[in-house]
Length: 116
Image (cartoon, rainbow, N blue to C red; front, side, top):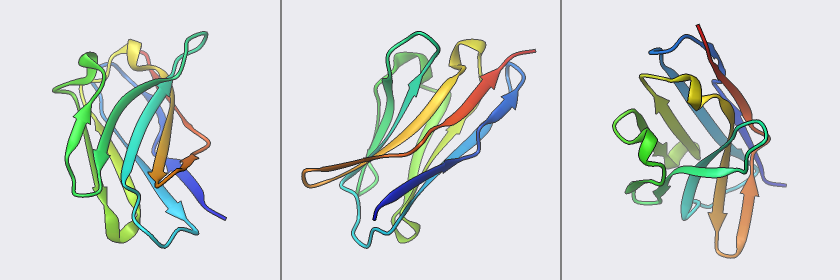
């Protein structure tokens, strides 16, 4: 059974940083694409960033460009999201997603709260 486990969320002040991690367990191949999504209260789940298996990043949300950095370690089956200069509007549950052929896997989410 494939499981994605996120970690690294928490409470941080505006301007602070957090580094999220998402590790895939029970999966011996390499995800073609790994992505981060976020869902704020009362809003839909939106893509934040994705990264291909050869390390090319794409940032779907203009609001995070220049502040967030996605990376991955294929040997560890882990994707990271470095979040700097955090703002209150970044507050959300952050989810990772892995895609391999026609299979899609989601993590359970990790809460990020940005407030003074």
